[in-house]
Structures are given as C-alpha cells and as structure tokens.
Amino acid sequence: MVYFKINGPSVNLSYSEKVKFPLIVCSHERSGTHFMMNSISECTEYTSNPFLNFDYIPLGSFVNFFSQASTYKFLNSLKNVRIHDNSTCCTNSIIKSHFPLSLLSQDSINECKIIYVYRNPLEVFESYWKFLHRWNWFEGPKLQTPLELMKSNPKGQSQRYQIENFNSYFARWASHVIDAKELSKNSSNILLINYDELKNNFKKTIGKISNKLEIDIINTPRKPDKEKYIHGKKIELHQNEKILMKDFIHDEIKQFTSLPEDLQKLFEN
Image 1 (cartoon, one colour):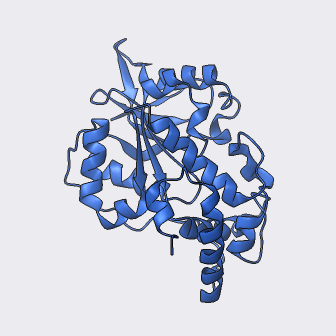
Image 2 (cartoon, rainbow, N blue to C red; image 1 turned 120 degrees about the horizontal axis):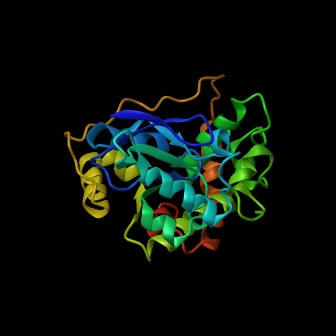
C-alpha cells in the first residue's frame, strides 16, 4: 500500500494494483456508514484507513458535488492514478458519501462500485438527534426529542446534502433511500444493504457484497469493533419517546411506498 496526494486539496489516500474500481459507501447520515466501511476494510483490499470523506471538507474547493461532469472527472482521477513508474493504479481508500446517488452521472456509477446502506428510521433519528447535539455549530436543529427532529424541516449545515427542499427531516431521509433504490434498479454497480442484515447476518452479508460487486475476500470476514462515535455529552432517550416515534413512523411511512419493503414491514402493525 502506497500513499499519494491528490491534486487540489491536501488529502492522503492509498492505492493498490489489486483493485480496479473505487469503492463508495453511501448513506443518509447515521445509517451505519462507518460500520460498513470498517467491515469491508477488515477482509478486502479496500481500506478505511485512510478513507476519503466525499464532502465539502476536504473537497469543497475542488469538486462541484452538484456537477456530474465535475464528480465524474474527480472519480475517474481516483481510478487512474499515475505513479512513479508511469503506470496507473486505482485508489483502494473507501470513499464515504452522504450525498444522494442521483447526483452522480451514469458514467460515474460505471467507474465505481457503490454500497448504499440504509437503516431503520427509528434508529437513524435517535442517533442523528444525539449527533446534532454534539457540535458547537449549527449542523442542524438541537431539539428536545428525535420525534421533533423527524417533524422539523432541515436547517443549518446539514442541508448541504440536499438536492431539493423538504418539509421534514423524515421526508429527506425517505427521499435519500428511495433515490438509491431507484438507481440500483438499472445498475449492477449499486448494491443496497440493510444495516440490520450486516449486523445480524454478518458473514452472509459480506459474502453477498463480494458476489454482487465482484470484490475479492482476502481475509476471513470479521465484525469490526464497535463504531467509534464522536464523543460528547451523553443524552438519554425515554422509552415513551420511542413509542411516540414508532407511532409517527407508522403513519408517515405510508406516504413513501417506494421505500424498501423490509423497512415498510417494520411498521406495518
């Protein structure tokens, strides 16, 4: 593994002659992104150390995330890195993204392998609510409960991932997942994975990823240590708040019939 510096921003990445495509792990925030990245890093040629944060920091001055031409040029450069002997290699640093996949052109999708992780919205918003409280800037609204967050319209720096306005964070989450599901119908390079499947059926799910995306397993798949969360003040959620959240999701999710069936079934009763 060798490190190189990409043109433009100061970012160190690794590359490998054994991989042919950049690998993107994409999700809505707080959906198990790092768990997936670390899982893949444990048993394949791809690595999460270092990974590339496909976000305004560190790439905002170099990549226009809302230009398909710009993102294609950038991703293509990661696939064709010229090294010391004038040959080309591909980065094996995993690319982490929270932008909707539809911002990528079909050419960009053809350049990559993409794992899209989705998660039970109850868990997403409990985690996201705590996450927003941990920053000393306006990443998003710091509300009293996750239920209030689901109902609130997106605000603050969290809006950078949006391609349109939404009347609630819940609608924003649903749109993000549906966006990936629709794109995956027409591309074998995009695979949707339920976070619960990775957590509860780990080896089987890693095998599915390997088979569908043609990623070689080089070590026995091993569930990584617990995700390293950003440290901050611990916030507890009362059990009755979870009940209220479930009731809200039960009613709200009916508006989004294109969500994956396994998510919809969680709130049928």
